[in-house]
Image 1 (cartoon, helix red, strand yellow):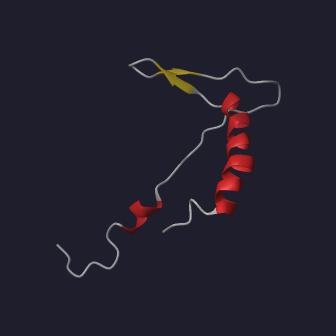
Image 2 (spheres, rainbow, N blue to C red):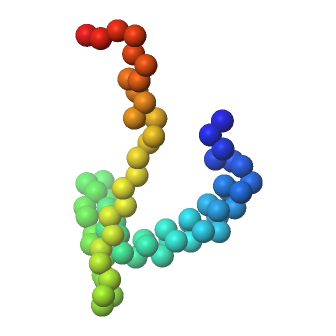
Length: 70
């Protein structure tokens, strides 16, 4: 439906996106244990910490086209 399993999309994800994210991981904090304690990355000279933000596009459409209002 949304094309996430199209051949070109799968190829891009496997060959471009995931390898790039693997490189970026060294610059991101991780969260460990049941209390999710933050572990900051050890950055090389000139590197800045990265914070990745993800979103679910469907949340932006939750109340579109409403026929009634409260």
